[in-house]
Amino acid sequence: MIAVMKSLKTIAAARRWRKGLEKKVVLVPTMGALHHGHEALIRHARKLAGTDGEVVVSIFVNPTQFGPKEDFNAYPRPLAKDLAVCKRAGADAVFLPRVDEMYASDASVTVAESNLSETLCGRSRPGHFGGVCTVVAKLFLATQPTHAVFGEKDWQQLATLRRMVRDLNFPIAIEPFPTVREPDGLAASSRNAYLTPAERTLAPRIHAAMAEASKLKSPRAIMKSCTAAIGKIPGARIDYIEAVDASTLRSLSNRKTAGRLAVAVFLGKARLIDNIPLPSIP
Ligand code: AMP
Image (cartoon, rainbow, N blue to C red; front, side):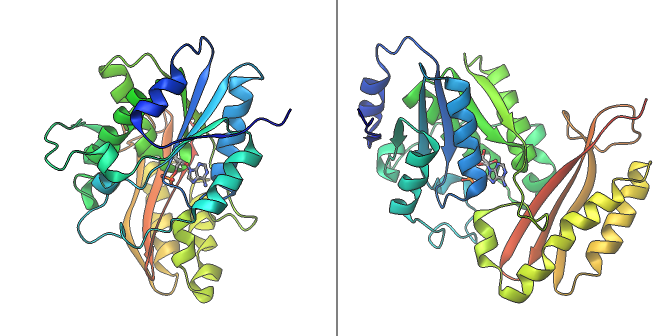
């Protein structure tokens, strides 16, 4: 028998689906416009759930994590293609709520994180991580997963959501998944579609600069080298380039703890983010 992927459009439908499932339920939250990075996350969720468990993918372009000048309306929404990706990657259900299903027009309660979300992207995108925490908390309450998969591509998001789960005692295991890249090193992202062909050929130089810089020892030298190399990419505007502690996201002063080299760079209309590990040096 060929299993049919369930399409859950309301919170009530998601709860009905969830009710009585005494097995692993693995959630993969997404905003759609699914690429091969998302597909790898869903396949990972399938493995985690096993043949017994259930995989649910949420597709919801969350307005509360977009700033007033950001691309909420323009964000791509290729639903039919997304559903095909979910199905072939092994999802059992997709949760597809409308904005008015998720948010009352006078909604006034939100989830705020006040430490990890203040740095890096949080500085240039005020309110973004509050929106992410709020929507993920709501997705958790709607689908009640035992596990949820998030990409390391969005390292600050992953760290912030781990903190939310710890501090609000969600009974959910957060499962990280490594960044999926294009063959030339560029991190796969829905926003790569905003690059012109010329920008697309320049974009891999961001990851190349990061990889080269990460061979250096001191965090300060790493940041300096990376800034110089990315500064040479025609048209690139640096938002930030920082070496941070992998868990606290504070500036890394030495290599005694595990770090992360994190960057955000504007290239044309696209704001590209990436991060790579800076392993501790004994
Ligand atoms: P998004 O729809 O872009 O918000 O992403 C949904 C999930 O996919 C998040 O957990 C992201 O971190 C993850 N993701 C997006 N791009 C990648 C990638 N290139 N590699 C790994 N995970 C990714």
